[in-house]
Structure formats: C-alpha cells, structure tokens
Amino acid sequence: MTEPRVNPNCRLEDQGITGLGNVYYNLIEPALVEAAVARGEGKLGLGGAFLVSTGAHTGRSPKDKHVVRTPAVEDTIWWENNRPMAPDAFDRLHADMLEHMKGRDYFVQDLYGGADPALRLDVRVVTELAWHGLFIRHLLRRPDAAELAAFAPEFTIINCPSFKADPARHGCRSETVIALNFEKKLILIGNTAYAGENKKSVFTLLNYILPAKGVMPMHCSANHAIGNPDDAAIFFGLSGTGKTTLSADPSRVLIGDDEHGWSDRGIFNFEGGCYAKTINLSASAEPEIYATTSRFGTVIENMVFDPETLVLDFEDNSITDNMRCAYPLEAISNASATSLGGQPKNVIMLTCDAFGVLPPIARLTPAQAMYHFLSGFTSKTPGTEVGVTEPIPTFSTCFGAPFMPRRPEVYGKLLQGKIAEAGANCWLVNTGWTGGAYGTGSRMPIKATRALLTAALDGSLNNVEFRKDPNFGFEVPVAVPGVDAKLLDPRRTWTDPAAYDAQAQKLVGMFSDNFAQYADKIDEDVRAAAIG
Image (cartoon, rainbow, N blue to C red; front, side, top):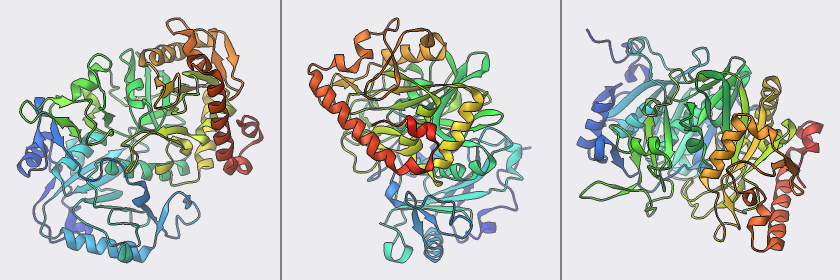
C-alpha cells in the first residue's frame, strides 16, 4: 500500500488557500516532467532533461525582495540591505495573490532545508509552474515518503509568475515581488519565473534563523577528503566565482555546491541538489556536471538549443550568461550520501577580480580572513542579476549580501569564532582575470586554479616559499609545482607594469573606502589587517 502524498490535516485549504483548480501534492520527477511538457511550459530535451526559458527574468531580482517589518524582527534585520514592507501592504498582497490563484492548478512540494536533522527547516513550496516543482524538488531535500503523512511545514512559499504586483497597493518597487514575512511564516513570489528565487528564499530564511542557534549559515560550497569527513573544506564565493566547479573535484567527496551551515558538530548542506552555471561548460573540464545536462529530470534554464536535434549550445549567451542546470546531488558520483562533514580544515574565499590585480591564491591570517569575508570583493558577472551586462567590481559582504537578513558583523563574528575553534587554514583564490583587466586580460586558467587548490587542501602549499604582497598584505606563494611562476605574480603578467600598479592602487582604494562602514564595529586585530 502506498503512503499518503500529503498530510490529510495540512492541505492547502487548511492553510486558507481555497478555490483552486487541481492541486498536485508531492509528485515525483517523472510526473512533474510529464505535467510540465503537457502544459507547454518547456520542451523535453536529450536524455529527458527539461528545457525551459524563464522569460524576462533570467536572474535574481534583489531590488524587488522585501522583508515585512514586524515587531519580532524590527531590531535584528539589516534594513539598509533589506527593503521593508509594511504588514498591511503584505496582507493586501497576500489576499490579492490568493484571489489570483482561484481556479488555477498548483503543484505542492513538501521539502526541507538542512541535512543536520537537529537543524532542518520544513518548507512547503506552492508553485504555479510544474517545472518549478521539479526544480525545487532537486534543490531542497526530500523527506522519506513515510514522513509526508505527518509533514507540517514551518514556512510556506507561494510562487505565482503570472501575478503582477501593484507597487502603490502592495508597498513594493515594481510588478515583481519577493516578500518574506517572518511572523506569518510565509513568502510570496510574483511576476518572475526565474527558479532561483525559490531556493534563495529558503536560504534567506536559514540565514536569519540559524545565527540565533549559534550556527553559521554560509553561501559556500563544501567537500571533504575521500574516506575522511573530518578533512573538510568550504568555498565562499558569489555566482560566477567557481564555487560549483571547484568543489566538484573528483578526488574529494562533494558535500554541496551552494549553501551550508557550520555548527558545533561540523558542516552540513542546506540543499539536496546543485544549480550550476552552464556557460562554456565542457565535457573535458567538468565531465560530471556536463553529463547532467542530458540526464532525465535535469532542469535546463535559458540555454539555446538546436530545434531539430535538441543539442545544447554552451557558448551561445544570447538569452543570458546566467544559463543554468539544476539536478539532484545523487547525479554527481562523488556526492556525499549524508551531506555532512566535520570541522573545516581549510576555508577558501573565491573572488572573480575584473581588475586583473589579485594573485591566483593567497594565504590569509584569521584576521585577514575576517576582513575579506566582510569585504566580499568580487565582480558581478553578466546575467547573474537583471541588468548586469559586463563585469562590475563589487563588494558583497559575507559573499552573499543579497541573502543576508542580519547585519554583516553578526555573520562575521560567528565565522571568526568558528575558524578559531577549528584552527582552519584560510585562502583567497582569484578565478577572475590575469594579464590585464576585463576586456584586455584573460580568465585565470582553471588548471592552475585546481593545482593550487589541490596543494592547499593536501597541505603541501604550506611548505612552499611565500612573499608578502606589497599592496594587500597577504602572503603569496613564490613557486608551486605545476603552476607557471609568472602567474603567481600578477604584476609580471601585465605588459605594462606601471598600468598594473595604477590598477592595484585603484583596487586598494576601493577596499579601503568600502571597509570604512565596518571600522567601528569590529575588533582591533581585524582593523589592523585592513587594506589601504
């Protein structure tokens, strides 16, 4: 006898969502693919992948994300970074969205975030699009079938791409809206079909909830040595820095590619899948991720393909540079069965430097690590957000400012404490440009990055000679086996050393100007590590 697909006491009507058409609870992947194809939401691709375009929104809409201003969160939300929404405006938005939903079919997935059973967050995701149900089923974690009969979500997400908000009536910025209400434990998403909003909403929730429990939430990937979960590494970095690529190392076990927590017990993945960028993806450089693009049920977002052969074009960015594939963790052969690891031995901060100034790797003291974590320097690459068409140097604190509901210092102090307790080695890795800035130089060779990371993770990099960088104060290896020594000294990769010096000073100034906002909120050792 089959288990019930939904808790009979927790259907949508029990949550006040009534008058809908058909409601499909917890369909498995084949049924969701079947529904998505039948409804014309996309196309069945090679191997049974699902090919879909998300329309006008091919990336996140951070300016349209709001937090409802309720008494319980008033003093703990970082309001400078999180647009407020009035409770009465949210109530109007909620009522109007429920009215809009009447008569339409919906797909419900009961899932959770957090592989640590003691810290998991049960979430219900209600989607207008069948393929969104497929996407979030990949990206979050799936309860056992037996659990569904008693599943009661702590938070509910309602996603209606066909609903357009009214800024005057709903207290938002545009017709697109992502609204989080911590009091009502409800998230409303309207007028965007970009699936990443679903998972980022859950990440934002955990980013708010976990620090109160002494747990560090992180926008990072993570892996551990084969046969040794205690030899773990975490990789911080924004979209486009290489988190997914670099953590999916076949010589290590993948814990997860995007979002993790760090508790007193170690690290744990929030998610059950991966959301990998596919621009210029190659079978030779990343065979396993490439293989997922023709795997049954993989969601292929915003990729150009041949209408006759269905062959994907990994180089055509005419839709967006932010083309992606979403697949479950089990699609990667070296993925951890538990999604758990021990205390990290190495903390890697990834940056994509469009100035072409930073070295491919640098060793950081704990205070420097804290500095670079709060700085969160990278370059937004085209397609990761609406309106970004060329790399923009940016500082996104904690390597994830758009998803940080609390003040940066809260996360910074948590991380500082965790690094100190674990005695972890800290590294800054630049996957951006070398030999010149964006437009002149070239991207850092991935083979060199992998060789340097391997040496960092196996401990051999600690044994080479280092020099102190005159601009940034961190230590840079002088020579590493298998890596061109010239690459390790960025100034030598430029044809005009004076142009490099000018560019380096420009970046030093940007670091200094940005960090002024934290100067009175951090400890003396971090202030002493400041650049500029």
